[in-house]
Length: 587
Ligand code: M6R
Image (tube, rainbow, N blue to C red; front, side, top):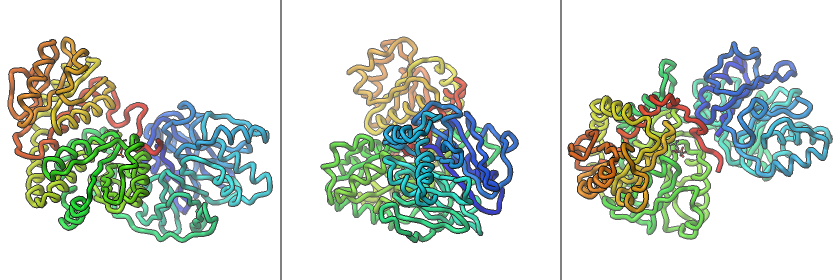
């Protein structure tokens, strides 16, 4: 959460930073700030709101060769201009931009107050520039003051620091992502590659507990040993469609519509790669899936088809709930970690715990150059291209496709699954085209409701949970997805006249899920059936093609479209839901 970028070179640094911030906006968009340095003068501009609503001309900034920027997702301190970054030192000479949380900020703040410092924000970040100022006032050189300050910070951070008297960018990383990019006599630093990929993809992915300085070159240091380190640059391949199209107004719809192509590209990877991973899984004694939000739901759905196809009983768990499961990880375990961003803090923590216990970690990740592949033993990339909308849609389909292929590879059926997935891409396309009008009509009839329920059985119950997440996060309608059998164990009490319930029907579960639908109908609830066959219990019918296998890939498609339409009808921004950010780098 929060995106940071810095640039030093011969281009207009302010323009590079503003452009980069717009790319990073998915990480947080409640406020932003830019600082530029020219002739030993720090110029700062901060604003509440999303950077995409502002242009260069709206800001009192000029061309310089060194600038930094921040787009915020508030953790400590309300969404105000004072709390936006950069945060400045009391003498106004030091500017800090921060992604992460400083756990011991209150103790540090007290220490600084004791030293005579005052604070003008509610952020944890403001202690950093003031600590640096404190050490400089005690005679430390800037670099030493930076290192000493870092040694006092507990928590997670990616920070960029400017000091008015020095033509350089200082930076550090513990637990939040940071990459340094090298161009021709120019350097970039950002939370992720998308911020500057247009200029260079030659990068150093900074490991934790490292800091450094960008001058006319880059110097890197280990925070532990305090010694200089050399980390080789690597060139990261950027997917073909990663460039932003300025004509696109709503990425959610674009990304939903891309899914047939995304699925085909996800599975267009070497069979040997899947065979290698399948062999690791076959040899293991325990298989776990972990992730957060939609990525967890992909693991949940996959646990059903790993059971039915590969005959393996897997344990899906929320990364934030790793807790007591830790003791079950050992060197006979495989942990399949799912993350679009590759930076979700809870996922990284679960992976570290599993690795410490000797488990093999297989990561399924979309964004290249991120932390999860660095921690994992093996990585399968989703190859879904940049997902800009905060809601995960196309990456969910890519995750399901890859896990479906992996389950079949474990069972010795890679080629069969590949063929099925190719057909499924066409079926997804069919749903997107033929059902758009019906789904829009359903949304028009139901968007005023306060509640939405979604039920399914077997893997469709996982799709129900995912569909409910889509609806609530983008339309703000309270939505619950769960296994149909659970209805009469509680939620039925909430069903009343006209409250919509989406019923996800599969051939194997048809009889029982339709009887759950009847339970709702008997209480005058409104039934929206998602099925390949019509049924008299349905008030609305969203038809999906009849497929013999891989149905889980189809079931969420209408729910994504439904969520999108509900959001539009309710006047919600489909790409930037309130209070959320795409990359959740804090616990
Ligand atoms: O980047 P990740 O896949 O690790 O992100 C996990 C969740 O934060 C993410 O899926 C979130 O739930 C989305 N907003 C869902 O649409």
